[in-house]
Amino acid sequence: MDLFNVSWLAIFAAAVSGFVVGGIWYGPIMGRKWMGAVGLSEEQIKEGNMGAIYGGAFAFSLLASWTLAHVFASYGADFSFQAKVMTAFGCALGFILPAIGTNYLFSQKSKTLFFIDAGYWLLFYITMGIVHALLG
Image (tube, rainbow, N blue to C red; front, side):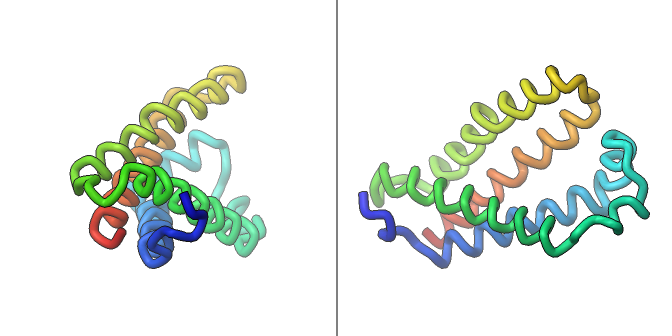
């Protein structure tokens, strides 16, 4: 498989879409609950280096999207819309959720935080799968 034989438009658009989902999820939908679950105030959040935080998060979104594009490319052009969405969902369900769940168990984080973050990652990957299915 060629490292660059993927749809860069799909990779970028899917990363952006996942990033937007995060802004909505951790903003108006779950923002206050998430802040309470991690023990941060709005003032503390505003004190963070937003350029580094958002830039790093977007770089990770691009990496996730690029990896997903390679998963799809490995199956060839016959990979259906539904298969791409379900594969993206499966990546989140089978890899991301167990990874964060294990970390949260050992760091003794709350179930509330786990479900907030798990919900986001499922939506993130489903959204990326849809974008890749449409543009890839």
